[in-house]
Amino acid sequence: MSKVYQKRRHILGNLLPINSTIIIPGADLKYRNADSSYNFRQDSSFYYLSGFCEADSTMLIVNTNGVITSSVFVPRKDKLKEIWDGYREGPEGAKENYFFDNAFNNDEINSELPNLIQGMDKVFYPFGKKDGFDQLVINWMKTAGTKDRHSKAIDIADGSSLIGNLRLIKDSEEIEIMKQAAEISAEAHMEAMKTVKPGMNEQSIEALYLYEFAKKGGRFAAYTSIVAGGHNACVLHYVENNQELNESDLLLVDAGCEYEMYASDITRTFPISGKFSEEQLAVYNVVLEALRTATDCVKIGNNIMDPQIASEKVITKGLVDLGILKGDVDDLHQKGAFKDFYMHKIGHWLGLDVHDAGDYMENNEHMGFKPGMITTVEPGIYISKDADVDDKWKGIGIRIEDDILVTESGNFNLTSKVPSDPKEIEALMA
Ligand code: GLY
Ligand code: MN
Ligand code: MN
Image: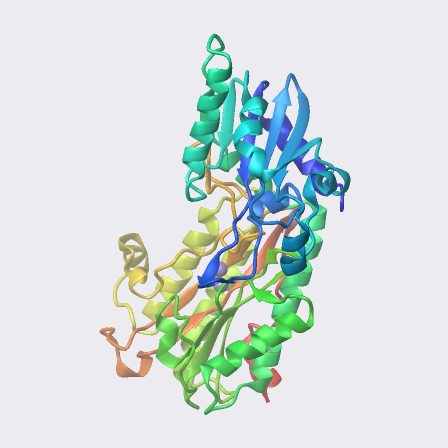
């Protein structure tokens, strides 16, 4: 196993105050029905700090006077269980292959973990992230306290931001993986543009994406794909994906693979016939301009509100130019009139999670962009069937979404391989 995980544990350990510890829960196996489980996916923070992918594990990183040690509780070796469910590393494997200083069976956690936190000043853990875990931590702290009644009380604090803000800046290993995730997803979108035909069902297109992802090593989608023909695109989290595609409609697809645990997140909106209508193109071009203007704002010196405000202004002006909004552009922007048609934010951090860890504020200000951050940029315009607008606009829903890496000199678009320019889309579909 790569030593990068051990390195990350040391970085996190050095962010802890002296004489404190952070406890990080791994994920449990989840069941879909009866005894049939979902595919196991490790908790993203646990994975980030270990690379270890067995369910029901817990990790602890301790800073004792600047010396960092890490311990892990893992499933016990068990011949019968391994015949049914696969190989287990056990504590020995966790030490040998994952470079933990201490490792225990997870059925020993209630007796062993309190020993590891006894005498600490402070215990961090991610508050409220895992059912039942908050109570477990309290129990372990109580037990630690009763081991030496004359010792000082242990303080408790939320460790979410400590881990999240580490995850927010991607290291070179992560950037390489995310480039591959983005490329696989971009190629799937191109394949969909070439394949879609009127009369197909949305779920066939969803299946095409999953196949294209899996062929290249991204067996799972990073999130449930949105495959929305026509006015279904105006339902922002449309995931039914079961309607027939009409020749005169657009198809909005928001789909990205997970590759080596990292997410990609791409939206493209393209004409099912292969040719945009005049009205579709007019709205599309406003969204495209918002995408380009907002993307240019993703750079050092700016903060997360710069692309947000830029996209709002472009969309407000575009809607006025099309006659969909009426009034003074600045006034309408000030009043938030665009929110009837563009009601979500411009983007979010992207990484191990599609809506990745990491704060959006620092020191009471909006988070500034720093090299190694990856954010989506995803403006949209959604004109519902019930909107108070000329009939010709009704039912048009368009979003375009790219994944943008902040660099020292500007930014790098990880998803530029799949066209967003309408002429290039039509050429690819011809
Ligand atoms: N695909 C989820 C999102 O764009 O936020
Ligand atoms: Mn997104
Ligand atoms: Mn998306």
